[in-house]
Image (cartoon, rainbow over all chains, first blue to last red; front, side, top):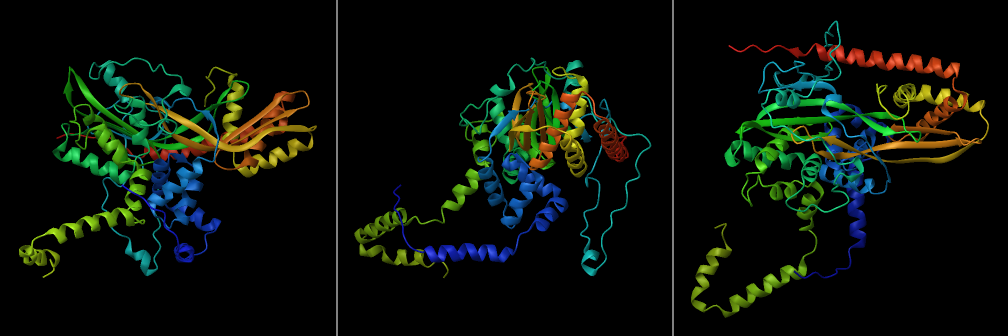
Length: 360
Length: 147
């Protein structure tokens, strides 16, 4: 493929950007704060895909891109590169999560019980059009229980291991600073499990859903049942210069384990997690993880396929680059076409007329 | 919350946990009064940056990177070389500095009545907030029956 530099249009380009920004109007701190407060799930989705946790910056990115999600993720990923990495936190373990929602579709009576948390799972989805008629929607208050739920819930997978249902595993041995990191090294295949899970954590929600859904509908080998789904907050545990470990704050996270069938005497499990509360993404991603190992090369469940194609910035960037000038490439297509036409016998001309006027 | 952690003493961890989540305006106001009684300090660092958060996969116990959290960090020292340190999630350099000032005061003086009262009241406020949230969460506990 050949490229050529183009010149011109500076004024038009400048005015085009002005037009885009003028349509969005003045962006002030109030607008950013309104987005942050009123759209936590959208903010969560953007933070997850940007793999940068800052509600304030994610809301700002949404404000200045008018909610164009791939642009919002792009500016956040770009801004991220301006910041030094100060530390690697202590790895978050499931049993430490401050859990607000924890359900299992596979086991009715899990240790710690099932907690629905904030969800619309069992609710009618009805648009509150009264709001548009001037009647504000005021949510009915929660009838809080007498006693609080425990902040932490045990790991279901560990309980299943104790029952002999899930394969035993070794203790994690990699020091935090040695964990493979996609932001500093390329994704190569076969990918390490650390790369696969990091890539899924920052994957584009819609892309992961589409490919995960394909697996669920039957293009994959394993049909998922949710072993455990959690929405929680994780403490960001860092180390004081004097050695004290403490939490610098909390971040919202989602985790899903899905299971399908017995394999080698144990339940097969797939896993995924992400920043923010985003159930669809982690269930779909865990389904891809579950299907991955037996997936044929080239299928949508093969890791090379789903990891490459759900990388938000690369995918959207590649897609939209096709609208940028490709004059030389396209010129060569036209040249070849004209050349071929010039060499065609006159007798084929009527057929060509039919092809060039499909609307008739 | 991390009182049982090894590495620097339970009390220090408990103090830092409260300071990092304390309401910013109250934290900054306390730091202002603490600063008034302090000798000159040196600012070693006061910046925003990222903390990478790894998570442990429950299927194969593999640690992987979930993503980076924006944090604000401050490190200060007094003439004797005692360090004060603050780190909070989010973009608020003043808040990190306020935490470092209070941490330095505690490290240097061992005890401060105003800070002790602040830690007690903020600790109670945060615990009550958590308690209220988890009582709401408990209301969503579900007992499933199969037919």
